[in-house]
Image 1 (cartoon, rainbow, N blue to C red):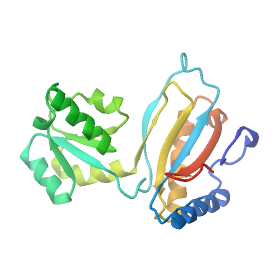
Image 2 (spheres, rainbow, N blue to C red):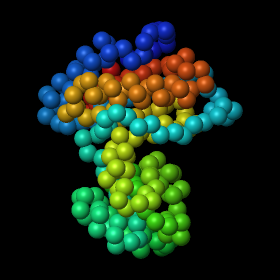
Image 3 (tube, rainbow, N blue to C red):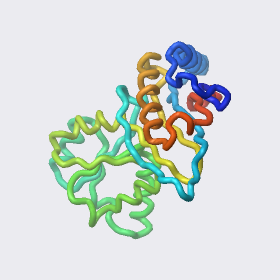
Image 4 (tube, rainbow, N blue to C red):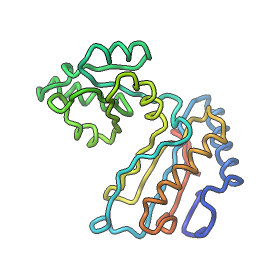
Length: 219
């Protein structure tokens, strides 16, 4: 474990310790000949999930968090569809998901399975309930100006969500095994420090922190 209850007081983002761990994870993935995502898995302690305030915050990391981020733009105007085509981003028209028929519900379910997050343009309220995205634990960004789409996409690729639910486990991606180890570490450092700032007692609320790839064991 990167951090455990036996190592309280240690520097959590210890570069000299973490870089070799990241290198180890990358080497294991190379032996499997697969591209995998590196994620932080952690358990917090000292929280009463019935009484203590929960949080739901986004953090922008310095580097992209996956080798490929599956993003879909939802909108109802031709200009946003054209911009998506120009940028090579998936687009879904509001008309394709508006309504509560079995077919429309099935289409919305397929969207939340396929994509990591969504960018929503225009007046969506009568077409799409954002709660549906939130319940499926997907993130979303609201886009005001079509000209800003490329910038919002880049921001989405670097954004991780920290949401405290009714259990002590939290996880977030910090990079791909194809990335430079320094960049993965930089993402870890920014992400873990942001999370610590949300916890009521800071790092004292961390019980254990591990790093893991998709098919690897936690380290």
